[in-house]
Length: 324
Image 1 (tube, rainbow, N blue to C red):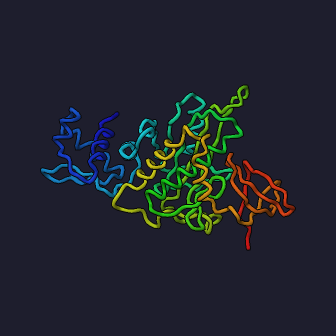
Image 2 (cartoon, rainbow, N blue to C red; image 1 turned 90 degrees about the vertical axis):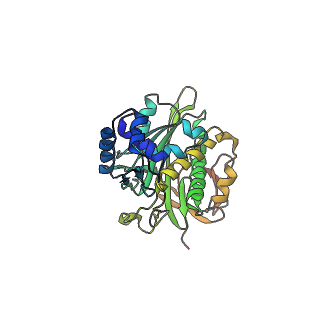
Image 3 (cartoon, rainbow, N blue to C red; image 1 turned 120 degrees about the vertical axis):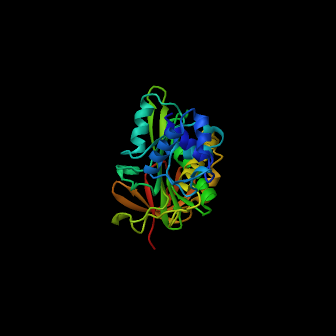
């Protein structure tokens, strides 16, 4: 770890408090001049650090630049063993995570970006991912699941993200089957799970769970206006809210990652589903077929009833609420 990161780690661990420059130099076995140069470099990158004679350096509470050092203090339990890689900008965290998974990256590897230039959603859609206003991450898992059970990964992740948002932001969320998180009538999060399968065993080799959360995103593209929203109009300025929410999402996923087949999370998923009991449209072969959302079964499939009273359990696809 280079000196700049070592100093940032100390500042993050003491956020809002002053650390004497001489104390930093002594802990890291470097000169005061080296400390000053590293602080200067961090400030140039945008970190809000104040310096007071005889008191030292302080990373201000409102600093919200995402880094490994800003996230780690908030990780708990098994999430604290995850391997995090933080980037300023990538094309897509899922694309990078899939490359790493194919090269043998271990379970719990997390790719986090402050910006995506080619963020991806389900069904080939793009995911709007501007710098510094959202959370964009992908987590590599290696669950022992058959392909037909892989929907459980997405639904468990949806519950984890919903609970993390509620805990950190204090707002109520709902879930649109299979992978979208809503606040009110606006989508604020999408989840994209991509997997590789061993064809001999029929078991997943790996799954990459991509999560995109609109934290304080504004000025959405025209096609998203009226559909997409954000958790906050303005991010809180007294806390590193982005890093805290990233950590809590990982904490919640880590809590569930080894119990996907236990179905313990399904009741939480059903409670948050805003489709159940509503008239919907099932999109198939470029047709919108009227139906009613009846239930979410024990395999996390959406049970729908068509107008001819036949029923189907959907494990993939696209549905929308039917307009009045």
